[in-house]
Image (cartoon, rainbow, N blue to C red; front, top):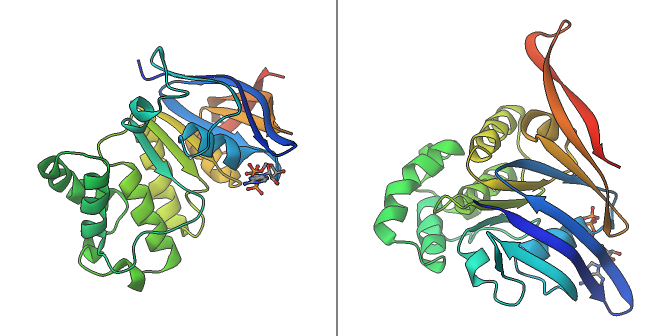
Length: 237
Ligand SMILES: Nc1ncnc2c1ncn2[C@@H]1O[C@H](COP(=O)(O)OP(=O)(O)OP(=O)(O)O)[C@@H](O)[C@H]1O
């Protein structure tokens, strides 16, 4: 049931080892991944997104070893890369149709899903404009929308909310919480507010290994009334 097991994952670049034995499992829910610059976050996320071949270790999706045969994982994957953009000549609708075709999704099902996706990232009013005319935050939201095509069981996002204003950030956080009800979501971000609002679990990467894990307990706060304050407690040191 939508579980990615990562076992002793290693990635080396020449003599340098960027991942030195990462072991973790992802189940439905939102997991945050944090760590200093160079800790290996993007390398880990690229490897889980099957864009980087591991030098060692195993990726197992729902009991199936996908380390050398990644297509089973690609079929269930939604991915927002750290950089790179949507094609500027296309409108959001055209871009989503293009990505749907690249993902080999049924064209009618894609067309049926597009209005809800554009609504989820608040771009319905701009569906017919070329992405090249968008602001940075709007273009980022198109990328978030394409990652949700086909309701992926595994959603991987690398710094997805850079450039989002307060209103759009809140909308994005709610979207993540919703996705986490049915998909395994891995979120790399430096924005603590996104983690507090959307993640139930937080993994810390340090020097290419998982150095700690905390889980969030949401308890009503006497200070903020009905709004719970995030409380993170250590689950793995
Ligand atoms: N293609 C590559 N070739 C050589 N070394 C690389 C390559 N990609 C990453 N590295 C090295 O691997 C280590 C981890 O880099 P990575 O980009 O995964 O870190 P990060 O945690 O994502 O950092 P940041 O927060 O700055 O994005 C760094 O020492 C980096 O220099």
